[in-house]
Image 1 (cartoon, one colour):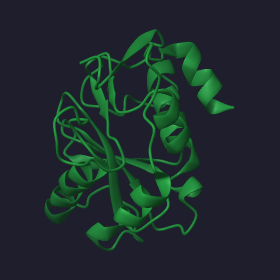
Image 2: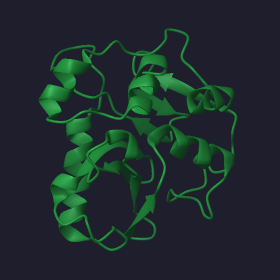
Image 3: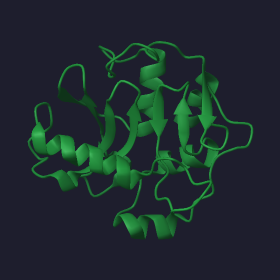
Length: 178
């Protein structure tokens, strides 16, 4: 299982992940979310990998003590970028609604899913590379993307800096710890 492999590279927060009402979250977002993301949130929650890559909670309610980013905010960033640049995206991504954001890097990259497949477990990861000024698409799910990043298994680093590239011993900091 991919999450088991990720756990060997990325230490989980001592307090565990986040408890999410997935039915309510998916209703608010208007779509199901990938099972690997759901498992990741249960183990790690919203937070960041060594302060370099932030992972969003599905939906957040306003109030003190809430996670700093959610999928709605990340999706807004992805769609804003899509409106300016489409280079690197597959031809079937014809409008911004095909992008659903789940994370960002400290070097201004945006991470999202391309949601054109009806099965969320088949959604590839797209990264807006601020360095390359184009979209990079990886035909893997979110957890396998993180594994590929930390293990250095892609042809090139998918992020604009090398802080996490090929460095499989990282710490995950939950939003509660931050």
